[in-house]
Image (cartoon, rainbow, N blue to C red; front, side, top):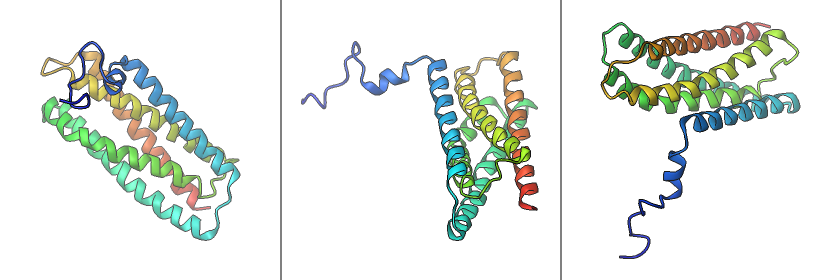
Length: 192
């Protein structure tokens, strides 16, 4: 058996295992910092880059496709969350259904953020600034929602504490308010 085939020593786990052993708050903080950095980078791009008509058209297509992908997945996740909160689905059913939807949510949100930088946003407009703030809230709420998902999965069939029920409800409410707010402002801005 070669060294590469040997199982990792329980006393010296591999790098991936070490990363997974970081406390949850460290992983959440790192993800939140990454989200803020991505948001700041795309805002900087929007301030400093003027896209030509072709790039603008391509960015608009990506923006709309990302909206469908990300917001559609969020609606499915939140709908299943409501089914759980009303007792129509078990927590295990909801977690199993929603776990794979985190990927399209993040792809959609990332696509919206990146493509939006090429759509000539009027950063002098208070509405646009509110929309950018809502997008940041969305992304940070998504980081928190991922941590919440892991916490609920760790319940392993045990009754969920009231604090987690409240956190789940608030997470869904923030998600819906921020998504609908950003979509509404995007629509209003497109009318000018």
